[in-house]
Amino acid sequence: MPAFWEESDFDDHELVEVVRDRASGMTAIIALHSTHLGPGAGGTRFWHYADPAGAMRDALRLSRGMSYKNAMAGLPMGGGKAVILADAARTKTPTMLAAFADAIAALGGRYVTAEDVGMSEADMVTIHQRTRHVCGLPVSDPEMAGGDPGPFTATGIYYGIKAAVAHKLGRDSMAGVHVAVQGTGSVGGGVARLLAADGALLTLADIDSARAEALAAELGAVSVPAAAIMDVDCDVFSPNALGAILDDTGIARLNCQIVAGGANNQLARGQHGQLLHDRGMVYAPDYVINGGGIIAVSLEYLAREKGQPCTRAEVMRRLEEIPVRLHKIWEQSDATGLPSDQVADAMAQKLIGRG
Ligand code: NAD
Image 1 (tube, rainbow, N blue to C red):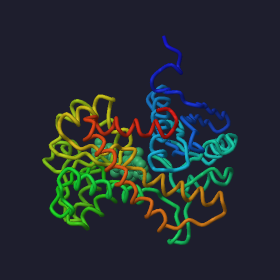
Image 2 (image 1 turned 120 degrees about the horizontal axis):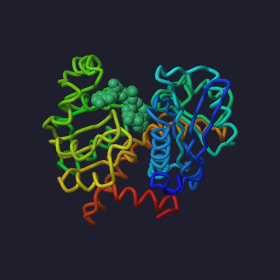
Image 3 (image 1 turned 90 degrees about the vertical axis):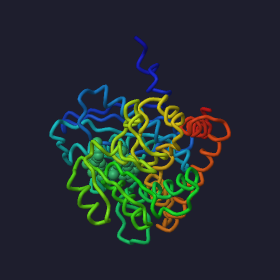
Image 4 (image 1 turned 180 degrees about the vertical axis):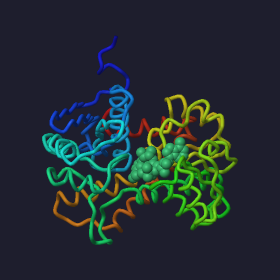
């Protein structure tokens, strides 16, 4: 049996720490993939895993993803991620958060946390009471950067979808472009609203069907059952719910020309980027198109560390770089014949000194 650190998911992580706090019952994994460009930044996931190996795998893959994401976002930040292993009832207590905050503090700024699935802005405030290495904190001034990264992520994806439509379909307007949106939460809902304002035709789905139906009614869109969204005949499929949906079966079901959405780790395996490419689809590498949130919260954190303000306008300006990077990736993909995910990975690896 290979050593744990020889397994492919480990991918030369600089540090993997398992934190146990008996008093609160908190168990967490903090993974730092690379601090080559700066402190490892990435959110904390609070999730119930069927087995601890699944939690470790999630932490490692997400942490590496953050290295690539932060590098491609042009941020002076490395990649890290934390998962707190929740019980089946997802019990979260202030003492658990305090123990977790102390573990972050002990890393002395090598890891900077943020919100992720199962964690809220209020949780970030609680953690911030014990360590300053937290981003995504609320701001009272709406002109200033900070708070929930979801809307910034959604804006970056919206720009990315427009870029993909220009690149693949040669259209400079979203009017009449049909987008199937999987997941209508913070990110997917935000993307749908921005696209609707541009005249796109939308088909929406969520496992919370009432949520998708309510948004569809608000936007004059159509909703379908969650199980049917990958079969919709459309121009763009936008995954904004779960990872690993682009596997052999999922890709075979797709009936679109572009795949561009915010879910992390969309490709089930490395070969699935090739499969999308072979089917002639333009794929927006997930960690490039969904970098808006980390751009926003990192700029907020870096500004706070320097004691300088960072405005929302500055963040919005930086989000406009996302489509520029995507165009570079697709142009290189067209020139080399390599799938866009491989082009992006090579660019990111070079940036973190592992190319
Ligand atoms: P969210 O919890 O607000 O929304 C997710 C939505 O997806 C929920 O409404 C949920 O019911 C729905 N959903 C779950 N499984 C589904 C399925 N099988 N089919 C259809 N809908 C399903 O989460 P979010 O913040 O919008 O994040 C969505 C995705 O984007 C996640 O993969 C997340 O990791 C990723 N992401 C989020 C951010 C951010 O800033 N929030 C940044 C980068 C990446």
